[in-house]
Amino acid sequence: MSAILLAQVNVWMDAVFILLFIGVWLFVLFHFSISIPKGRFRKKWIEGKWPEHDHLPVFLPKLMHWIHLLCMLALAFSGLYIRFPFFDGGRTPMRWVHYIAMTIVGLNYLWRLWYAFLAKDRDYKKFAITKRDLQSALGVLAYYGYFSDNKPHVAEYNVMQKMSYLLFAVLMLAQGFTGLSLLTQPILFGLSPREVLIGWWLGPLVGGVAVAGAWMRVMHYAINWLFIIMTVVHFYLAVNEDFLIGMDFFGFKKYPKDKLVTHGHGHGEEHAAPAGAAALEAE
Ligand code: HEM
Ligand code: HEM
Image (cartoon, rainbow, N blue to C red; front, side, top):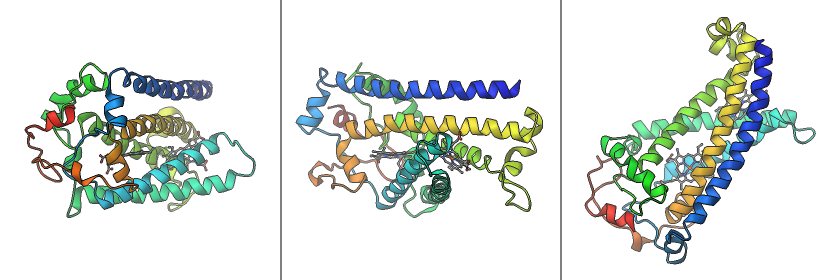
C-alpha cells in the first residue's frame, strides 16, 4: 500500500514540478512583457533609472553568495543526475560532486549564520520582518502586480525579499536534513545518518526505516524543485529590478558613485522611516 503510494507520488512529482518549472518561466516572461507597455522597461533599461542606494554590498556576504550559488548549481545538477542518470559513467563522479558540494554549502551556511549574528558587521537585522514591513506588504505586492507604480521602501530589503531569503534559509536546513537521511552507510558509531536522524522516530510511525527514508527522498526531491523554481524568480528580480546593485553584488561592475544617496537607514541600524526614500524608489 505504502509502496504503491510512494511510486505514485514519485511519478506525479516529476510531472507536477516539470510543469511548474515551465510555468514559472512563462510567468516571468509574461511579467517582463507587461513592463514594456507600463513604461518600467524604458525607465530602467533605456533611461538607466535604477533604484538608488545609500550603501553598497559588503565583501563577505558577496563572497558567501558566490560560493553558495556555485554549490547550489553543482547540487541541483548532480542531484538530478543521481535521480535520472542522463549520461553514461557519471554515477560515482556525480555522487562525489554532490557530497563535496553539500559539505561546502553546509560550512558556508554556518559561516553566513556566524556573519549574520556574531561578526563585527553582523547584518541579521536586514532580514528581520518588522511591523512596518508587514504594513508595506500590500504595497509591495501591488507594485509587483503592476497595480501601483510606487514601491514602498522601508528597509534595504523589501518584505517579499526578506520572506524569500528566510524561506531559502529554512529550506536549506530541510534539504540538509532530508539529504543526510538518504545516507545508509554506518558511519556514526555503527549507525547510519538515516538511523540517527529518522530511524528511531519516523520509522515506527510509517512502518519501517526504509519507508521513512523513501519519504525523505520524496521531500529532498520536492525541495530540489522548490529551490530551482524560487531561484528562477530570484534571478529574474535581481536582474530586472535592480541590475546595477546586482552587478556590484556579483563583483562584475562597481555601483556608480554618483547614484549613492544618503538617507538615514542602513547597515546594522534600526531602520528608521527614511523621509523621501519612498519617493526615490517610486520612480
Ligand atoms: C544541503 C545539503 C544536502 C545534502 C546533505 C544532500 C544529500 C544528498 C544525498 C546523500 C543524496 C543521495 C545520494 C546518493 O544516492 O548517493 C542526495 C540526492 C539528491 N539531492 Fe541532495 N543534498 C543536499 C542538497 C541538495 C540540494 C541543494 C539539491 C538541489 C538543489 C539537492 C538535490 C538532490 C537530488 C535531486 C537528489 C536525488 C534524489 C532522488 O534520487 O530522488 N540536494 N542528496
Ligand atoms: C541565479 C543566480 C542568482 C542571482 C543572479 C542572485 C542575485 C542576488 C542578488 C543581486 C542579491 C543581492 C541583493 C542585494 O543585496 O541588494 C542576492 C541576495 C541573496 N540571494 Fe541570490 N542570486 C542567485 C542565486 C541564489 C540562490 C541559488 C540562492 C539560494 C538558494 C540565493 C539566495 C540569496 C539570499 C539568501 C540573498 C540575501 C543576501 C545575502 O545572503 O547576503 N541566491 N542574490
